[in-house]
Image (cartoon, rainbow, N blue to C red; front, side, top):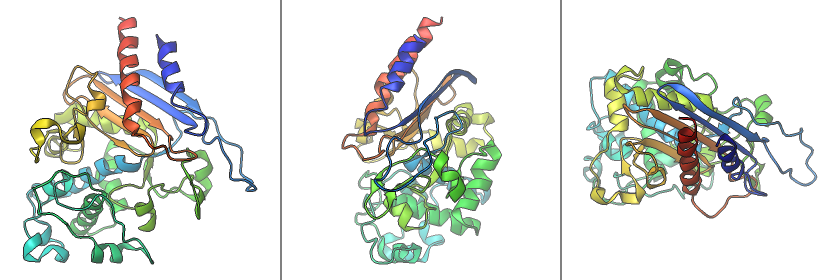
Length: 354
């Protein structure tokens, strides 16, 4: 059964669509599966000399893409908890950009549940994109609380707000509030240049070349590599520790209020019909349709680069799957297709060991 599961993970590495895959699973706090396959890249830019690709192991870092949103949410919620506030906190109380009457009702809960009315992406990146330009040009296009629409823009604002409340840069805050308390020593923004060849490569992009060890997301890259929507790099063991902190809930070092905010579903427009295939929490996704093979309620998040994690709050299982499916070219289909067969294979493997 273990061989069958390994074959499923191996099948995620396809010619010209991914070179690396790591699966790490735990049950009741004990590791049950650890599979690492492939190499950090399978393709070189023509005429550009590059070091040999490295074999993948559990220490290989991946571009976590939108999983960064979960860490942004955790850092922001931890700051609110420190201040004795809650997710009903008004953006206008900290950010002057939202003091116009039409924006004054915006709350942290709107940002983290994707109901703030922001567009999905920031398209006004040129010329000379930077944080000041983002703050000047990014505003909601719909009234808050009327539509559930996944928005990277909203989470960039969540990162800006978290930094404003804490009085320190977002990368420093995420480290202090989330990474350091959980012991996630191999997770962070902007890897050093000397470390990049050991990180799973992503896409070949005209103008950027083969992206390896630099954030793949175009908006996060335009903003300097530290953003609320993307930018974190990490390993499977680190991400599993984060998932386990959410599973343990009341005993998590994130704190019980923060963990509850992250894991408990919230009501959003269309919420009774599992909008966008899941029920939102404040920063995560509950009972994602791709994870429905598991018997208990789950929370987790995925990333466009082919990364994902899930856990069962107050339950038994946590699971991490890291791939670089956008290497060397991005596919057209959703990364959600990765989950179903792997979860089914994991459950079958568990039954085979009972």
